[in-house]
Image (cartoon, rainbow, N blue to C red; front, side, top):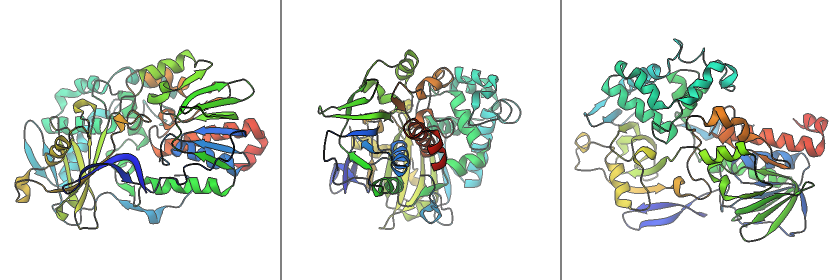
Length: 469
C-alpha cells in the first residue's frame, strides 16, 4: 500500500507524493466503541509504542494504540539473521571512495578511506589517552564519572578547535562530515558528549563505529520488522488501534487519563504512555502542566535535521562506491547501498542542518545535490543518470520535526532525568532519552520495555510483572 508520507521522482512521472510502505495499516481502526475504559492508551506506533503495546497486551492488559500517521513506524527477541544483509559490497565495481571538498576532488581505495576516517575520529575522541574509555567507562551511564559532565557543555566545534593543528585538510573534511552525518545539526549545535556517547556505545573504535552504525541493514526495511510487533500485539486480541489519529490534549483526572484527538474524539484509560518525540511534545497540551524541567527540555529540543535521499543510479558499478562532498554540497555523505531489480545501483545520501534544503521544494536542487556527489570524469560520462529519487523530509514532518535524536550542548546533562520522568498517570517513553542507544531502534525498545514494565507493575502488581519478564 502507499503511505501519505514521502515523495518519489522519476524522469517520466516527475515528483509525486506518497511512497509504497508495508507499514500502512488497513483498516485504519478496529475500535467498535468509544465508551471503553482501557487499561492503557499508547500514543505513537513507532518501535517505542509497539514494544510497550505488544508486551502489555501479551500480559493481559487491554491496550489502545493511537497513531497520527497512516502506518506503523519503525526489533527485540527475533532471530533476524536471514533478514540481514550488508550495506557495503566491495567485491565488484568501481570499488573506490570519492572525496570532494573546496580543496580537491580525488579518489582513493576503501582501505585508504578507512585509514583516513579512523585517524580523524581517533584524534577527535582521544580525550584521555584511551579514546574516551577513562572518562566514559560505562556507555549506558555516561555521567557515572562526573568528569564526563563537562563534555556536554561544549560543542563539536569547540573540540575541533582544540585539535585543529593536528588534523590534515583531508582529515578535517572527513571528520566534520562524519560528525554531521551523526548529528544532522551544525558543528556549533552538536554536543561533544553525545558524539562521545555514540563512540562509547560502538566500543571506542572506528571498526566498532562502522560495524554497529553502517555495515548492516534489514533486507526488507524496518517497517517489515515493526510489522511483526504489531501482528503479535493483535494476536493477543487485547489491542485496539486507530491510525490517522493525531492527539490534541492529555488530561490526567487523578483516577484515569482522558486523551482527546484533534478531531475531538476522547478516549479514557487508567494510564497513558506518550511516545511523542521531544521536538513534537509542544504540539500537545497537558492538564496539568508539565514540570518546569520537562518544559525546558522541550524548549531546547534536539538538533537533528538530517535530509536523507534514496536514489537509483543507472550504473551497476557504483555498488562499491562511497563519497564525501563537503562542505559545499547539500548532500555530503553517500554510499552504494544495493542493486535494484533493474540492475542499477541504489545509493543513500545524507545532508543536514549546516547546509539544509527542503527536498520537495525544488526537485532540481535535490537532483543536483545527488549528481554533485560524483566526479563524472571518473565514469566516462558528462553526468550521472538518475532513474529515481525517493525521500521523506523529516524536518517538515509534523509528527517528527527532525530525524533521530541528537542533542545540543547542555540538554542531556541538565534534562535527561526530566525527559523520562512520569507525570502522574502519564508516562513518557522515546529513544530520545534512552540511556543506551539513544536515537536508535534499540533505544526505542529499551524505552518501550522500561515504561511497559512500569505500567504493568502499576496495574498488575510487581510480582506479576516480574514473573512475565
